[in-house]
Length: 226
Image (tube, rainbow, N blue to C red):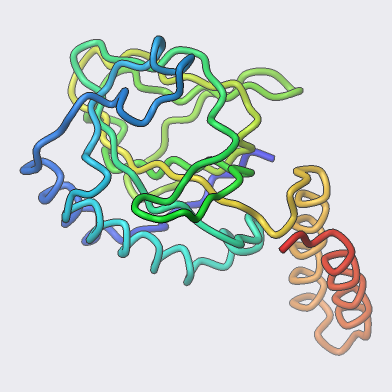
């Protein structure tokens, strides 16, 4: 499932993030790439231990916790601390698949990357190129969203970032370990949750929402991996 989640950050939060990031010192983005990805990766990245990254990462994690669409779609167990990258001057990231396992900085805690997320921090009109291209069984999808919007997609997907030929593409990226590892099962639960909410809104006196909710939680109980 590839899902766009609008307005994860408010305009004021995006402005604050850009002010801090534009003044920060960036390094070669290959520092967090795997062996294969390092050959395809050409961008700059905020160091993982940078105080600006930690401050903005906490802001993003707080926004995600308050976002019901993200919670419903991702069913998050763990979220990797958000990282930040920047593309400009023809920089790009060729086809790759994200590493299956990531280790939390400064700890022995590891995360299985079930879902990948990109949170756009540049307005689409501020740069040319920079589309996130995600391949799935239905073809290749081009994603270029307004600042503050997020795209969520399976980490198993082959994907790339097209060259940025004008301006700068600034974004946050991170990974999620879901309580439900299988993307097909997670998608079914998301669709069921969405249907429950519609039925509850359209027929609040009906017994159907309660019955469907029971089905939802029994499926979650069966599929959850914690």
